[in-house]
Length: 63
Image 1: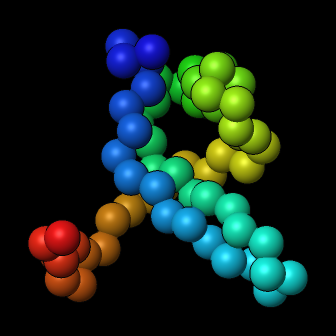
Image 2: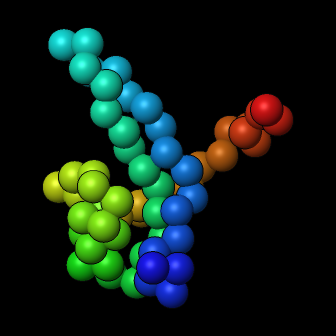
């Protein structure tokens, strides 16, 4: 769905109970496109939060 959703990056999150999850940063035309993308790749798309602003303290490190 490259015309509707663009993946930026993902973070692996370790919950207090030890389980792992992910938080993905995407650019999309709307929430329905994100939900459809999540369904297509077999991931939950339950919590969709808009990003209000970006604050960069320092750039991402080179890998």
